Each structure stands twice: as C-alpha cells, then as structure tokens.
Amino acid sequence: MTDRQPLVAGNWKMNGSRASVRSLLDGLCRGVPENGVEVLVCAPFIHIPLAAELLAGSAIGLGAQTVSEYGNGAYTGEISTDMLKDYGCGYVIIGHSERRHILGETNETVARKFRHARDSGLQVILCLGERLEEREAGMTEQVLSEQLDAVIAAAGMECFSGAVIAYEPVWAIGTGRTATPEQAQAAHSFIRLQVARHDDRIADGLRILYGGSVKADNAAGLFAMADVDGGLIGGASLKVDDFLAICQSIG
Image 1 (cartoon, rainbow, N blue to C red):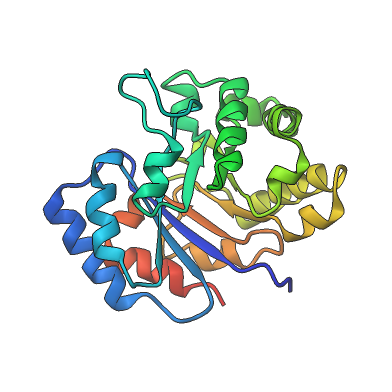
Image 2: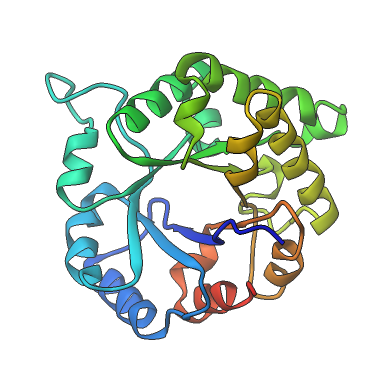
C-alpha cells in the first residue's frame, strides 16, 4: 500500500440548477466520510460561485471542468485561471474525452492548457483514454503514450509533481460499460511506468484515477487495485447517496 492519498472527484458535466446544486452540496457536506479520502466536485463555470459559497469551511474541494489556455484578455467566452482561483477553485480537469472527441481539443491543445494551468498554480486532473476501436485494435498503450508524451514535451516532468491523471476509457464513459478492475490496473500501471521512465519519484507519488461508469457497486473492486488511487465520477456524482457510497468504498 502506498501513501498516496485517495481522491474521488465528481464531474457534474453540463448539469445542475441553483436548486439542485444547493441540495446536492448540502447532502455531501453533511455526509462526507472521514476516511482519509480527498473529495472534490468539479462544477460548470456558472455554478462555481454558488458552489464556492456552499462549500466554504467544508472538507470538500472545488474544481472546474476546463480552463482557457490564455491569460486574462480579449478571449470572448473563455474563463481564465485567475478567475477560477478568485472563486476558490483549486483544481481543473484538462483533456476530458468529451472535450477531445466532441469539442475538438487536440493533444497539443490539452498540453498547452495543462502547462498554463500548472504554471498558474492550479492542480490539474489530466484525462487520458482510448476509444473502443483503438482498444480492439490493440492500440491502448500507443494512444495513452501519445496523449501523455504531448503534455510531457510541452510542460516538463516537474509540472506533474502534485498533478493527477485520470484514465478514462472512452468506451466506458456514460455507456454503462466499465473496465474490469484488471483492465483498469493494467492501464494505470502502464501510465505510471511511462512517467517513471522520466522520474521515479514523481511516478511513485502520482495519483491516477479511474473514470468510466464508476458506481457504488463497482467502485470497491476498482479502488482495490494497486495503481488505482480513486475515481473521476460522472453521473453518480450528481446523486448524494451514490457519490457518498463511492467515497466510502475506499479504505
């Protein structure tokens, strides 16, 4: 067993109203377990001010789902790292598969965002993962290497000190299909070994989360794997009881 602190991060995606955010965070704040797990919610931009207010003084951290690769200025519609930090965001998700495959973010775009966010002092959850056709073609490791290497080339290894990686097989996101614990472990181990090729110390401390249809009934098996340090949770993070059950399944 390592001394890496487990992390469970909720990704609300494009969901929520002021009423549902209040209800969800009230339930989470009252029920968050004291089992050494770091708990985080990543809200849509418009809900971050309310979430920051409701989470003040709680043990739950606040993050965003993406951020601009640019600083403050003439970038209509974008949100800067300074804006996120001003509202108490400590984390940001970078490179989620939906942003890569639906919204067109390339490995190079993701790498620039990662470097800018880390240089600005934000913790990053960097998402990596393969599509179904890539897994079936035996390309999982190639895809993960290409995605990871682009970030290492742009940002350098020191930017990974304190960062987090989330392995999210695209074929398991929102589909009800979940990688087996053994499949998740194999991918996580590969990612850690790729980082270790550059820096053993950073690799040993690097938290690698699993994301892809994690639910209360499969979380414990996934989190029991040696290189799985928690989860990036989608749909289940919108339900108080389900999310809390996932948080409680580590230990």
